[in-house]
Length: 181
Image 1 (tube, rainbow, N blue to C red):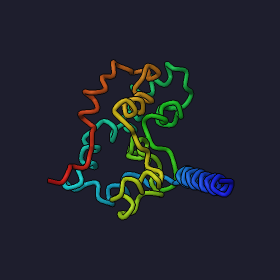
Image 2 (image 1 turned 120 degrees about the vertical axis):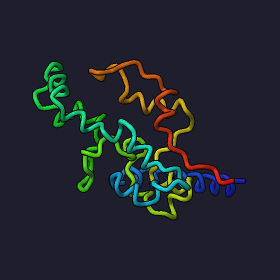
Image 3 (image 1 turned 180 degrees about the horizontal axis):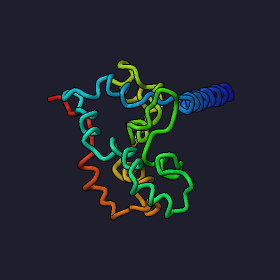
């Protein structure tokens, strides 16, 4: 009996260390940018054309909106001393500011919602959801979790906030992989 308890304790500890190591690996991931994500296979119809959906969305243009005189006026009215396109307060929701090689001008890129992609970017990993999540891709358990992520930017803190209707907006940006017949 005592040997069984010791064995179970060792097994549980090993499993916990494995989970901790995977979490640390995911935290160590670097951002790869939309061009790399698109190059993997997110632009084919078979895969759901996630790239095309993103390109048609406001997310792809989010940084560009910060370069306008109107954005600078808003930033100034909020007491920011730098132009909107240089202000961390604006950039946190309008651009992926990360590792070298990632162009902030690409706006709200894949990894702002899915997590830094270096750990799950390869084809063999991306084809396996469990491996993708283990590699650092953020998993959303349900629509409420997705909505919570969206509302981290689409909220009253934004100086141009308008009512956010999640279902309506999600219908425009939703990008799933089609089920095979």
